[in-house]
Structure formats: C-alpha cells, structure tokens
Length: 266
Image 1 (cartoon, rainbow, N blue to C red):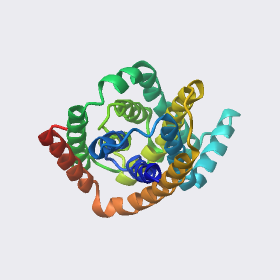
Image 2: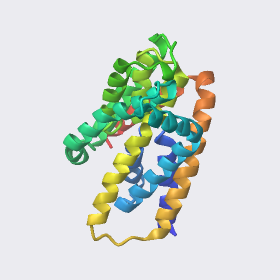
Image 3: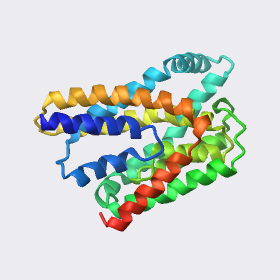
C-alpha cells in the first residue's frame, strides 16, 4: 500500500512538473530524498514518461493530426504550409538534445544530481525566465519560427539535461528571448516535449528490456494513469492562466526553492 501511495505522489509530481517551468527531474530527485523514500526504479520512470507523453499527445491531437498530414504532403513536393513547417521545426529542434543526451547522459546521471547543482540551476534559470518575460518583444506565433529560432530553442533544450534547469522552462525562456508570445513559446515547448519524452522513455525502456528487474505492475499502472491525467490538466490550466498571471509565480517559486535547498544544505 505504501508503494502505491509513493507512486501516486511521484506520478502527480511528474505530470505537473514535466510541463510547468520548474524542473521535473529536480522534483523527482528531491522528493524521495526529502521524504527518505526508496527510488521507484527504472520501470516506474518508463511508466510515468509514457503517461506524460499520452497527455501532451491527447491535448494537441488536433494540431498534431494537421501537422502530420501537411508534413507528409510536403514530402511529396506539395507546397509547405504553416503546419508542415512547424512539424519540421519540432523535428530539427530535437536534434541538439538528442546529440547531447547520447554524449553526456551517463555523466550527468552520475555526476550532476547533487542538490547544490539542482539548487543553483533552479535559481539561475528561474531568474533568466523572469528576464525573458520582462524584456522580450513577444510578437510572433509558433507558426512564424525561423531556423535561427529553432536552433536557439533546440540548443537551449539540450541544457535542460542538467537537473534543476527545467526543459519546459528553458525552452519557454529561449522562445521569449527570440520574440515569441508567451502562448506561442509555451505551445512550441510542449510540442517539443513529444520527441524528447519518446527518446528519454525509449532509452529507459531499452535499459529495462536488457535488465533482469522484477516488475510490480500495480504501481506502474497507477503511475501511468495519474501522470497522464495530471499532465493533461496541467497543460490545459497552464495555457489558460499564462496570459493572466505570466511566469513570475514560477520564477519566485524557483528562487525560493533553490534558496531553501542551499540554506539547508540538502
């Protein structure tokens, strides 16, 4: 029963923090440390990643259908559309993090999960998000992305491999600095998460496949369902409230969280 309770809370954390600009990896690393829980294991990581993947695909299902259709038509020589260009932008925007993951994933996983690194990353990139929100022009939509935008935002996403950075946070930051509106930057960030979650989940799934781990399926199923529901709700609520409240609540939360971690020397 305790294992299911832990799975429930961790899945909620994953579903919320995967898409909020506050770093899912930092919270998933810190929560077990703070509460002295045992790690849920590789299989659970795969389950909650699949859950958040289902959430973002379900939320953007209409847009994804249009993008896939127009992208396929563009391969046959049809005139590119806004949707096909966005599909290409998502694909090419994923390349930097894919390369960085292959080169540095093992090092980051073993050497960069210290709490002080998470704390400093949380504070620094939180402040950067606040500056982007305050000083950017915020005029263009995600359908007006240039190749320069894709390169900058995609490269920024690679930095999110460092725990505490936040993949959604740093891509939102880069999008704002490049002149996208808050809604456009957030939507492109969420769409970029699809191939990234597939890559991360695929890597973890492969590690699980070649291992001899005994799997308890009840926490996995619960984690998958809870992560999917909480992730979908998070995307919907975040996009609805973004223009009203902006990103400053998340900036303040990150600064507070990072400061507490540094002061307590966790």
